[in-house]
Image (cartoon, rainbow, N blue to C red):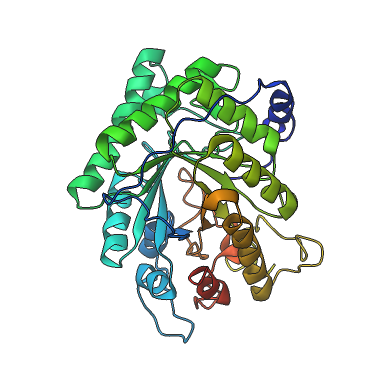
Length: 380
């Protein structure tokens, strides 16, 4: 997920100061009609990785008028045009695997939406504070670890392709501020980090040539972290096509920082830019007895938690993205809008008793009805 960590808040910033000057960016992949987002299309996205587990434990979803419906269709009817789904390698609960990603991809396609795939390269959450190898890869020599990254990426994407689903965007790693697959690809092993990222990008290009291979960091307002990381990715020959950022206004600083960072990245690298994770609470109340992650009644000064301020922050973030130079701001994705509070569908794949600390940031309220934020997302 998206916790501020010692690495993200201090170490990476320090490394960014010491980073070498930017090297020329690789040329952006040419758009075509084989599944890439069309020129001018703004991604209005929703990460619904937790949806199938939620449904399996009894989740119900309602339109704003109170009528029940399929969550994916409700999203599509609201104007959402892309869903994002994460992939774990061998999670304890069996969710967020190739099986669920293919199912979500097929549902998205039937609803007329595109699919973005988010590879964590882990058995559970990967973020700036933890990038743990899957258990099956733990003892692999480095050469075999690179092969595992390639093969896993190609396997999932190949299954989607066989199912008739061609992803438009593929994330190679999740919030990799400090690298991935620690310790081999950690931030202090830059050449190996680059080789692992390159293996994932190569698998994307080889398996679904129409998709953009994206690299993704947290701390969307931290320009030092981004320039350090992407300068090194370029220097190590990683052929990425797009840049993704997480931006949560209560963790990642003012909008001005996001704006300055995205604008600088556009100038430096000439790549399409996406905010692939953002959210804001509509309430501080709790629906499942598990403490919420965001409990402050006013997470950002002047903007108390409310349905109206969910809309405000979504529209404000989208405005920053849309104003990125050269039209390189390409989309915004809300993180887990369908992850409502349902007993059994908790955050920890290894603990069936775990709860959901995110349901007050979903785009469905505690009566399971679509909030105004969903309509706003579909109109970006």
